[in-house]
Length: 99
Image (spheres, helix red, strand yellow):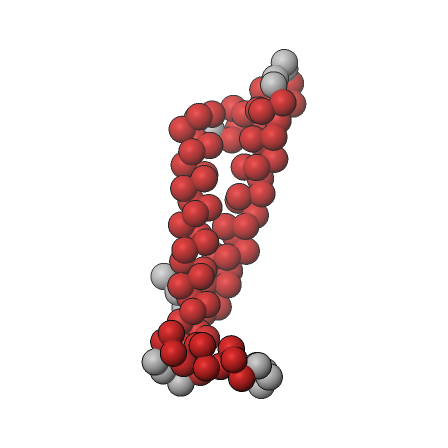
């Protein structure tokens, strides 16, 4: 489904200059690149959390059932947030046909 969107002339010129392609192709490519880069950052953060806490389940059990630190509690919230953002960006990637 195509949707008409009004873009400022400066934005159109910048996209054409960056991508050297028609505006619609340039917007799609910029969006794909943004999705891929952002998902990479979230995957990296997830890897850091797994490296430190081993698994979300372990961290959850510690936070919900036992003595824990503020860092552990915020890490659990961070983990949840990262997973939600990865899902959101993954859904958007599927819609665009990004790997």
